[in-house]
Image (cartoon, rainbow, N blue to C red; front, top):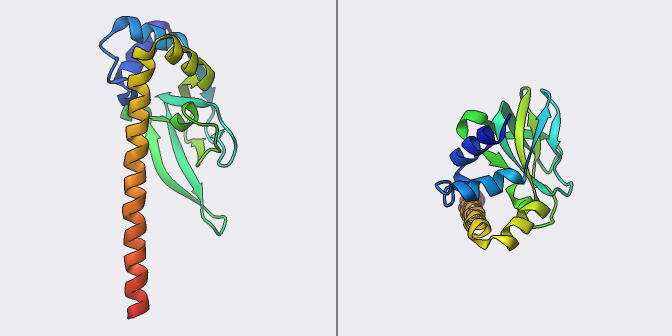
Length: 164
């Protein structure tokens, strides 16, 4: 995969929507990208481990898997390259544990961005880092709102069950 192919994929990723029209910015981002390949059923990210990179699905597919409190695995979602998706983006913002396990559901290729490289680029060129960080934060805010709604739904169901 060459630099042009990386840039073309990056332009399709919503994370870069605020800068994708600027060729200079996209070149800068592509310079901090590396390529990683995983075979079917390989673990890319393990829930609970500390991670420092974000993955963009260039080719292939992954399953996002969470553990229940009882220790059982359940698949949250399957992400395919044609969906123009990414995961692990929280690692670009904080140093906390991974919130889910990610498994390659077929042989897959990823564009990877390391936190240190992203931070250096953002510090050097805020006009690149700030729009990308805003999208990450909007994504996290949206997930938090959905979690709050889900918690209220569960709470209401519990109250109704107790009252019945």
